Length: 208
Image 1 (cartoon, helix red, strand yellow):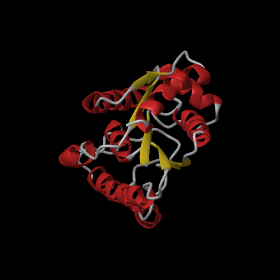
Image 2 (cartoon, rainbow, N blue to C red; image 1 turned 90 degrees about the vertical axis):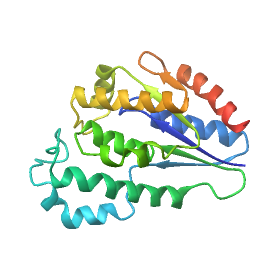
Image 3 (cartoon, rainbow, N blue to C red; image 1 turned 45 degrees about the vertical axis):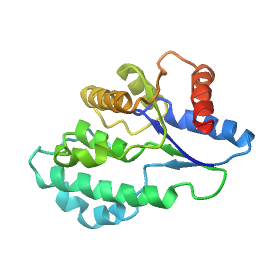
């Protein structure tokens, strides 16, 4: 058996914590489990180091909220470059060995959803990224204020407005509803209580 499980949600929703707890749970069941954060680049990071300053001329820094002009060059070019890079990254990290489970912390669609929330132009190739479906996914949702509070507590470089976080989460919900992915609310829940719900979903996945 080879399985992919994708954890989706805005910053602070509990993806990383649930990924760690899921890895331990599935490992105890005899599976070889690997967590792969979808925060790394194959070639896009190198391209950004070469051309980033020229492309993001109006950007103050990476710790401040930023939205490019809708019809600007960065708005059009960065999403498809990231999409191609994410596909390569996904193919390199898919589970190929027997009894192997890969837990992806975010996914290809998550990158484009983030771009959409930040005003990048992703609509022109939405059919590609919106329909690149994860094999299995769980969405974690959280009140926006709680998301911000969690990010501040763990000293994350908070760089998104409330409006951007709200739009991002709304798009995640639409994606989950389209593909019938489970949605778990984490706002007022402890990790232990949340994982009870995650555990039930994991059992469904591994018993398919």
